[in-house]
Structure formats: C-alpha cells, structure tokens
Amino acid sequence: MLRHSLIAFSIVLIAANVTLAKKEPAIPSAAGKQKQLALVRVNVTGQAYDYFRPWQKKAPFSKRALGAVLSKGRVLVTADLVTNQNYVELERAESGEKTAANVQVIDYEANLALLEPAEKTFLDGITPLEIAANTVVGDRLAAWQLEPTGALLATEGLVTTVQTMPYPIDVGQFLTYRISIPMQYRENSYTVPLVKNNKLAGLLLRYDSRSQLMDAIPAPVITHFLKEAESQNYRGFPSAGFSFFPTRDPQLREFADEKGKGGGVYVTNVEPGTPAMKAGLQVGDIVTGIGNNEIDQNGNYVDSLYGKIEFTNLLTAHAYAGDVVPFHIQRNGKPMQLNVTLEHRDAKDYVSPPYYLDQPPRYYVLGGLIFQELSRQYLKEWGPNWQREAPQRLVYMDHFQSELFPQRNRRVVILSQVLPANSTIGYDDLAYLTVTKVNGREVKSLGDLAEAAKQPVNGFIKIETEEDPKQIELDAAQVAAEAPALQENYGISSLQRLQ
Image 1: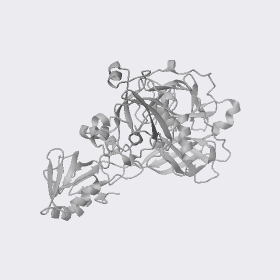
Image 2: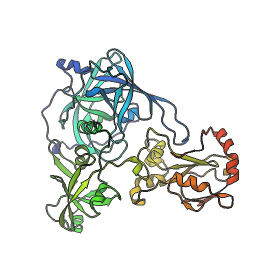
Image 3: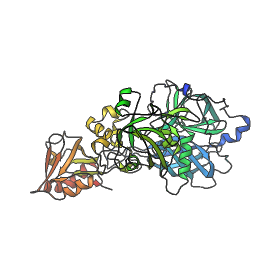
Image 4: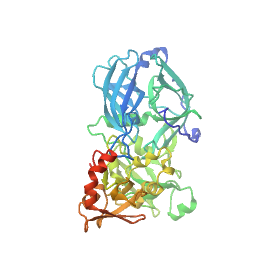
C-alpha cells in the first residue's frame, strides 16, 4: 500500500476518552524469536478490468507483500492485495521455498482476505500468530517487515487513537487504530502485520509518510472476520441501514419531543428493505441505546476497553449477520424497543454498487454507443480524487442513491462514451448521459436496454436520455451492418456482456 498515493488525515486525539493500558513491549524478545517466522512473503500478479474499455483488461500488475501465518494453515492479508488477481504465490522468508495459494475468503468492505497454500504442508514448522485483542491508546505496536535477506525489521509506534472510520471501499464505519510510527519503505510493505507482545494486533490499512501516521485494521475486526470465515457460507459484516445525526442541538431535541436523560441520535433516513426498516425504525426516532449500551448525544457509547466510541462499533465488530439486537428508541417522547435482525448488505443490492471486483463489468455496444451501469468502480476510474473529477451528475447519483431510488430494484444505465463510426455521426461528443427509455420502454438495467433495442420502431432505435440531447436515433439496419467493422476497428471481442 506504500506504493499507492498517500492519504493525509487530520489527527483527532481522543485519549481523554480511552483508558490507558499498561505498556507492553511490542518488539519481539529473544523468547519470541520462533514466532518471528510467522510471516510469509506473498507474491501476486493480476489484471484489473478497464471500465473505460469494458471489453478488455488493464496492463498486468505485480504486488509483493507479507502475510501473517495463522492457525489451521491460513495466511491473513488485506483484500486489496489479492483483488483482481490471476496468480497468488507464498514464499517462505527463511528458505525462499514457494508454492501457489488460493484465496479462501475475501471481504472487500473490511479489506481482509484469507489465503491457503496449495501444498498443505507448506506452512509446517511455522508457529502461527495468536491475536492480541486488548490494544488501547498508549500501547506500542511493532510493524513487522522483512529485509531482502529475510531478516526481520520491527519498527515500533504508539497507538494515539481508537475510533471508527470508513475503510477504502467506504461501506459503513469500522474500528480503526491510528498509530504514530516512522515506518520505513520495503518492497514487501503492501501488507504489514502489527504486533503486540508477539501477537497479531492489526494490519496496515493506509500510511502517510509525511505525518508518519498509520491507520490499521484492528484485532477485533480481524477476529470477527476469522470467526465468520469458519462458517460454510461467509456472510460478511452486518449493517442496520439507517442514517443519524447527533442531538447536541437543544432545539432538535425539543422538536423530536425528546424525554429522559437527553442522549441518543436522531434518525434522518431509513433505507427501504434494510433491517432497520423491517424492524419499524422511522425517521424522527431517537436511538438512545443498543442492547445494554446507552448512546450519548454524539452517538458514542462507553466501551469496556476503549472508553467512548461511536455506537456503530456495536453493529460491526461486536454483532454478526443474523443477530437480533434490541434498539432502545424514543418516538414522540415515548420509549420503545425495536428488535433489529442484522443482515449483511451485498454489493448487488445497491442501485450503484460500491464495489464490483474480481469480475468483468457489464456493457452493451450499439452502433458505437457504449452503455454501462453506474457503479463506484466506474467512477473510481477518475483516480483518487474521483469525487471531484468524475462527472458530477454521476457522483451525485451514487452518493444520494438511497434518496433518489428508494425502491432499489434497478440500476442506472448510462451512455458512457461514443466511438466514432458512420452510425454515430453528430453524436461524437456525447458522454455520461442517463438513459431513461429505449424504443419507448423504460430502462432499469442493461438487460432492459438490450431487449428494447431488439425491437426498432419504424426501422430506428430511439434512445431517450435525461440530459440533452434528450433523444438519439440510430438506423437499426445500419447498426447491424456496421457491427463487424466496429469490432475490428476498436478491437472489441464482443459487443455485449450482460452477465
């Protein structure tokens, strides 16, 4: 991850709200020397899909990282290391011995993946790492890296903050350690284990070399992932499906007819079809507690280990999909309890999926017009600053999809670009248009568009868009006749991919 563009963060210290623990040595001692070998190099080659030319892939990439050896012959790495991989290889640090590996479980939202060697005995003799789940502000952790010789390089850092924040996929809030650490670059630094007292405390999530601040995936999130991975069907991390706002404003509390101790958060949106809506949560409710934990006006509860921390930690790190969690609320000044059955929301259940990885993008080419379905993966083709540099209409639809499309049973079909061809003369400059109808039929997916395009009206295919020019007409016979030349000229292997 150190090779990627670095992200700067503002430092938010909440040490006053977290109980300091007794300092424990993070650098491995001589007694722990055997456990220093609980690392393997992970070599990955792969190709990402090209969303600007969705019929092809981008140039091949290679990544080199470290994996933490766990019990049961598993190796833990970050998900972004093995996303879009073609081949994964494990390499023993001390001998250079190599074997192929398979991705056993991957969770893009929590950015974690489990690998298993193809050769079952490959990890024999390596003492697996245990998990250190009790890290708090003030503890010192060691980032473990390997020199080219295989020697261990351990760099110590201080945990300054424990908080919830978005991970790279930006779905929900997850517990995160922030660490002040002068970590050095090594070529295997894409995944870096963080160790406390010879036990795994976390994995590198992102690092800013200028401020020397690291965000780390903490042990509680790793433990949740590992426990869920034991099940036959991995379900992912749960969510409730509602948005909220603090109730520090006395006028807001008065408006909501808040009674009692004056705590809780104000519900601003409840997404259709989510566990919160199924349980009966409504906009205007005040959530005052979850289980036995009271929620204050800022949305924090008092954690037994970390002190005050956002209550979303109760729904991600502590709860599992299928758990029934009591929500204590106030509605119109009256206390109530709602039992919410948590579920994981799959990427396919979004109108604009937040990620679409390890699978090719859907597309449809019609007479030089390229149609795709809106997704955040498509928007990220504009780079790290995609929220500012991607077409703002599409960014807006992605960001506010729950409000714009409350029924959720659809995709947003866009005309992403136009390839110069005889059938597209006059349309060359069109791009990023939202398709509403084709031949008079409403379009809610690429499948709808493909079916409607098969039924021209008076020999023409009429495409209606939300933005100007509002409609595009294609001669159906000309489109069919020029299709082979279009494929040859632009190297398009197939004019459609709908599955």
